[in-house]
Structures are given as C-alpha cells and as structure tokens.
Image (cartoon, rainbow, N blue to C red; front, top):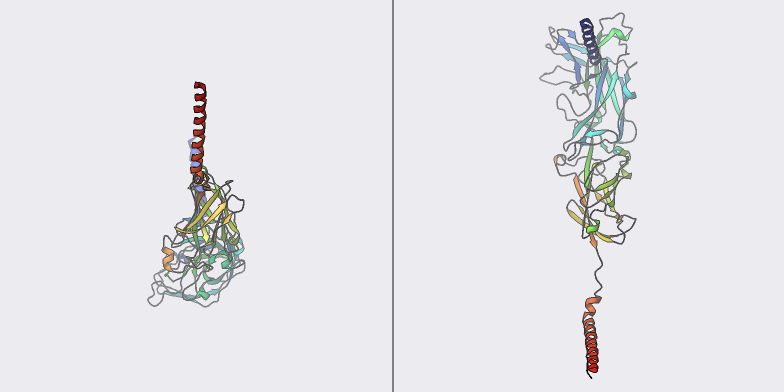
Length: 455
C-alpha cells in the first residue's frame, strides 16, 4: 500500500515537472524591448521560438476604471530587414576579453508565421482599463520562428509593419499614435533582431531543429546597437512592441481612446401621484465621424427600468429607459466629440408638466410636455472638453482634471394645473345677496303663517 502511495507521489511530481517545462517552452515576452542573455560566460540561454509583440491602446476616462473598447483592427506583416547594422556587446556582458561586434543578417522570412493571420482586433466585447491620465491596455501578436531554417549563426533583422485592417482611425474614435521627433518614421514600424546559434543537435544546418534562438531585441528605428552605459550614445531605442514604453524614455505614444461620461437623472415636483411614475427617457448619442460599432456601459441608480443599449455606430447610438423621481442612469465611455441629446415622453394621461433640462448645474429652456407618445426634444448637449472630431486632448491639464469630462443632465418636471376660473369669487357678493333674500323670504312666509294661525 505504501509503495502505491509513493508511486502516486512520484507520478504527480513528474506531471508537475512536465507542466512546468511546457510553460517554460511557451511564448517569449519582450521586456524593455529585449529578452535573452547569458547565465554564465559564453553560455547563452535558449529561448522559445515564439515571441510576443505587444500592441497598446491607452484609454482615457475621467473617473471610471473600465470602459468598453472601440472597434478597431490592426494587420501586421513581417519582412526581411536590411543587413549590415552593427551590434556591439560590452566586455562585461559575457566576459570576453574585449567588446564583441557583429553585423546583422537579412531576416529569413520563409515559414515565419503570426498568430491570427497577423491580426490584432478590439471589439465592443472587450473592456479597457481607463484613467484620467490614461491607462495602458495590451493585446499580443505572436511571431513563430519554429519552422524557420536559418542560414548560419548570427543576428537576423526583421521589419514589422502595422496597418489598419480597414477604415480609418477616426471611424473607430481612436487617436493614432505618434513620436514627437518623427511621427512618420516611428508610428507603424518596428525592427526585431533574432539571435540565432547552432543547437546541441546540429547536423548540417538543413533542418529547423539545427538552430536555436537565444535572444530577441525590438527597436523603433533601424539602427546600430551599442552597449548599455555607452557614454556617447544609448544605441537603438528598444521597446516591447507598438507601445509607449521604451528602454530610455524616448517620447512615444500609443494609440489612444478618449471618452467622457454623462449622468441623466429625473426630478418631479408638485405631483405626489406621479412621484413613483417612471417616465420614458430617450438619450441619443450622435457622432458623424465614428461609424464603427460602439457600446457604452451604464450604471443605474434608484427607480429605473427597461434600460436598453446595443452596440451600434456612434451616429446611431441611443439609450432607452424609464426613470422615476430620484432615479438616474450614468452612461460611461462615450467617444469624445459625441453630441448628447435628451428626450422625455409624458405618458401620464391628462396631465401637463413643465420640464427643465439642467446641464452641469446650468438650467436651460423650460418646455411644456403634455401627455403624448412623441418625446419632447431638448437642445443637443455636446461634449467640448476634447477636440470634438479627432478625440485628442487639447491640453495636458485636461487629462489630469478630475472633473472635466464628467457631466450631468437633470430633467426636472413640475406638475402644472389649471387655476380656478374665478367664477365663485367674482360672483360671490351677488350669491350672498340672493341667499339672504331667500332666507328673508322663508322667514317672512313663516311669520305670515304664524299670524294667520293666531287669528
């Protein structure tokens, strides 16, 4: 019995070891633009033959942790980079007698593959972390070199190009990334160096199993690489992909998504009967530029039902709900540049309300809404904090302002009743005289009757 237990324990340990090995053989993920190295002098560590390249969308929202993602898709291609770039190790990297220099080889592209046919996509089913100062959100492209037969040991340079799968940035509400010094060069291209050596099972170099990969470096420019700590230059600017993070703080930016929030609430005075009544509310979100699908998040508070909101182009978005006094709906993650229009329907038969739309504590026009099936249109409310079409932040201060970008719209209904016509008060003196006359007439008749009886 003990022997069986020991066997079971040994088997479990073996299984855990296999799981650990399988995980270790997974995709290599870049850190500060590079992965790989030496554990001891001239002993390179073999890496996975699949490397993960990051794609970032930075999401901005004044007070929410999460928003729904925009609809946007990127397609990536990989080609051979030009040979002859200089790569220099410092003497301390792997303890040679002096610094080593090699030149890059043209990348071997035959049998290189990419995950999902080279496509990274966000849809309305994805959520993004968001913050006033921006929060980074990542998806990854896996580039697989496992079937590649390299020509010889060396450093193979590749070019990775990014393009929208279709449409434009404006259609998705996303702001295109840029680099302060040269946005044309840096925006959509990365360079990947793949460090290759002979494997321990090397035969004649004709098989993919003859080659091991022991390092990767990703850069934003097609440059030479100099040792870290070089006093004259830091060499190539390294990054983990199409992100805003670089190894030396170079001013880059990722694609960005700027959003704002609106809370629509309901108040009613002068009509206790309808205090608990849910008035139909219709909120339109209109953006003539954003034509890719958008989906807003919504938080309800108080007496609210029948909230409906479906993914649709921003020019077609709407929110339908029924809201009673004290209730509210907060719409979250509206693409900047979107106009917000609010309608209310009075479905309380035989009543009229004076409705006032108050936007960010400023009261607007008062409208009389009688019972009808047609909503009463309020003036369009537009978000002007950010540049209305491109979604770019107009100033740095706006990014960090904890109030800008959050807005309130309150619909206040006051029950109106028709005043008395004035008939009673206007004719009251005559009515009193008439009443007095009737009383005198009755008394007079009684008096005459009493006199006749006495006779």
